Image (cartoon, rainbow, N blue to C red; front, top):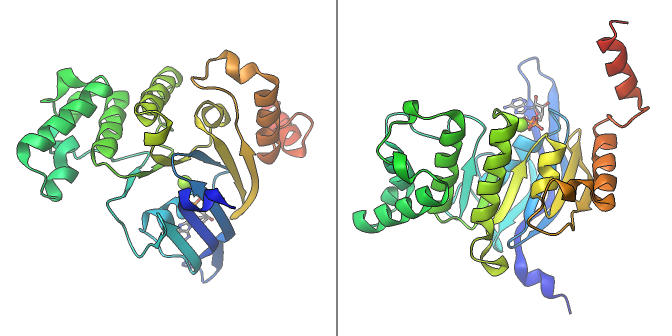
Amino acid sequence: MNTRVDSRMIELVHVNRSFKRADGQTVKAVQDVSVVVEEGEFVCLVGPSGCGKSTLLQMVAGLLEPSDGGIAVAGKEISGPGRERGMVFQKDSVFPWMRVIDNVEYGLKCRGVAAAQRRDIARTYLARVGLAHVERAWPRELSGGMLKRVAIATVFANGGRVLLLDEPFGALDYVTRRQLQSVLLNLWDEGGSAARRTILFVTHDVDEALALADRILVFHSGRQVDDLAVTAERPRTVDSLLLPDMVAIKRKLLAHLGLEEGSAASRIAASHEAGV
Ligand code: ADP
Ligand code: MG
C-alpha cells in the first residue's frame, strides 16, 4: 500500500536539541522536527541565521546527539558518525598538509582500500570535478572554488549514500557558486535517478535552493515551517527560475525570510538603507 516506506533514507522523528549557554539560558536550537527524506532526494534546508539548520545537519551526521527524538538513516537508528554519511562544511574541508589527490584518497585509505584502487577512484572524481591537472598540487596553490571542487570530489569518492552539505558554497562569488552547483548536480545525477545519493544541503541563498532542490524545507526558530516541492525539470536553466511555479516558490521563501515586498522586515531594512 505504501511503497514509499522502503525508500526512506533519512527519518527524523520528533527531534529536539537544546543548548545550555554560558549565561545559564537554554537555547532550543531544534524543536520537534519530524522529516522523511527519500533515497536519492536532493533536499535544501533554508531559513534565517540561527534557526537551527547546522544543528540539524550535525545531528544527522552523528556529530551531535538530539536532546530528544530519534534519527534513522537507511532504516537504522544512528548513534554517531558513519561512513554512509559524508559531510562538507563551508570552511576547512580540505587538509592543507596533503596534496590534492591524497586528500581525495584519505577516507578510502582509512578504510583500508588498496592503494591502486583508491588512486583510481580519486582520479575518477578529480576528473569529474575538472581538477585532473592539479592532482599533485598543494591546497594552498588552489583558489577557493578549486578547493570546494576537491571537497566535493572527496565526499563523492568516499562513497557515502547520504551527503550533508552545510552552506558549502556560501563563501564563493556568484559565478563560482553557479559553476559549483553544476558540478555537484552533475555528480549527483551521473548514474541516472536510480543511482542518486541522498543530499541534505543547507543554504541561505533562495536561488541556490531553487536551482538544486527537489524539495525545500524551511525552518524558523528551530521549527520546520514549510515543505515545498520544486518540480521544475532538470537540468534547470536561468529561464527555469522565471517559470510561474518557481516564482511562486521564491515568493513563499522570501516571505518566510521576511523579505517579501511590503513586509515589516523589508520596510525596516529599507529604512535602514535610507538612513532613517
Ligand atoms: P543556523 O545554522 O541555522 O544558523 P545553528 O544551528 O548554528 O543555526 O544554531 C541554532 C541556535 O543554536 C542558535 O541560537 C545558536 O546560537 C545556538 N547554538 C548552536 N550551537 C550551539 C552551541 N554549541 N552552544 C550554544 N548554543 C548553540
Ligand atoms: Mg549554520
